[in-house]
Length: 397
Image (cartoon, rainbow, N blue to C red):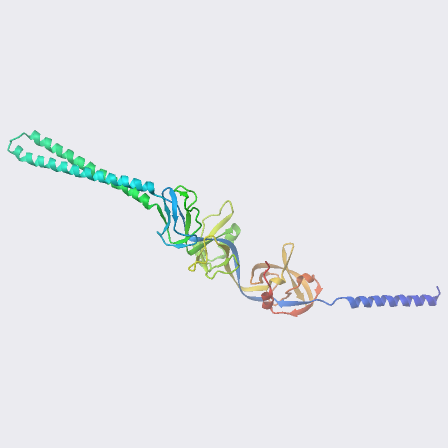
């Protein structure tokens, strides 16, 4: 190849390389446009949530006091009843027969009293007749003493007759009480639960399963548990010298129902058990809620939310955070470049992350689209309102 040809080939190669380079430059995508917000500082309220089980303030198992077959059911499940209201009727024919026999025993005992009283009267008359005769020495004192002994014997028989009468009355009262127990009444005012036995069922006082349960639900209790670490955090973070004072200082709590709606009435945490359950490693709390409209029932479930206040909290939208290998990150803006920084989160509330460390107020972070970039990526910032980002986050179910 001569010099002229070599120069031509070189020029053509250089031109082709430059064309490829220009083409690659034209194909390079522009930096993505992503919303960027300023890290803010404001008062926030977070929540600790725990699953709860709802029970009536009082739950009474209804059992028969005597054995018998149910002949009538006066109420239905879910019905509101008053204390003493009849719920069930038991067959009491045997008790009625016993009552008749006991009543006959009362009549017989009463007849015995009448006879014994007559004997006492006669013995007293005999004594009264002999006293003046003895005083006049018409008869000997032996006859008088014999008459007095007969009087004492008659009085003893009268006392026995009266005691037998009281025993007969007691027996009759016991049988009559059993007849009264044939009507099973509500022990409290409340709502009837599931009816486990109906007409024709044999029930008795030793049955393990109650006939039904009546629950007083004008006020309900919500039971929930904390593990040992959560309980120790509660003790250290809540004001008060002792547990009783700390419970008083807990603000009112919310009840989130099973359909994710918040119950209209606020509740108050009242008590905590005195020890950790060794089987579960948890300690149980009890909160009370008014239930005047009867919306809550014995056996309801839900979540209890305990509010926790944060003064001058540093916040970023939850959508700005992402997790890798157990650490939480955000993309912090360095001019037009996004760089990852590790943050520590105290709590999450209302689609915000409450930050303990890693960023400070005024820092700018990428609010959305963190999955599209990596550290060192150039982006085109779209200044965005912090609250508009948080409000746009939809819950995921």
